[in-house]
Amino acid sequence: MEPYKLGEMEQQFADLIWACAPVSMRALTDQCERAFGWKRTTTYTMLKRLCGRGLFERRDGQVTVLMKREEFQAAQGEQFINETFGGSLPRFLAAFTRRNRLTDSEVAEIERLIEAHREEGGA
Image 1 (tube, rainbow, N blue to C red):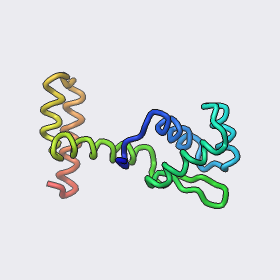
Image 2: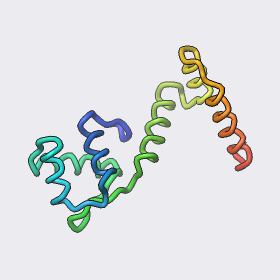
Image 3: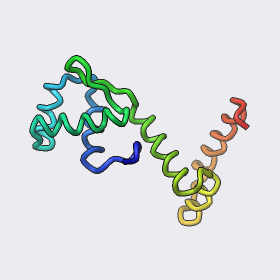
Image 4: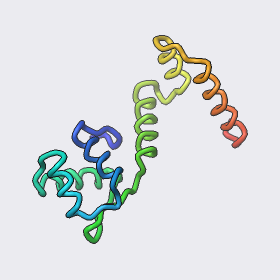
């Protein structure tokens, strides 16, 4: 199981938690019953999976976020680039831009990101 790949229902469940955390287990099981038609045990099973991946923590009847949605999405992107493009961002951009034309504002934003990286001593 890859840590940053979620199935469709895992993703929907994670999105629900990110939207309402911190949340009590009781409130979470109630929300999952309404949103997904899940029984309490299904919610517990899914939560255990996502806790095992380091996204959330369940302690004293509360569910809290360990990895914010934005951090998770960044990790997903890194994993994809590592697996698909050997960790090469330039190879990813080259492949992406072969089929998708970048707008002037997208090019400017990428240039700003590169410049900010240089100023932070990353290059």
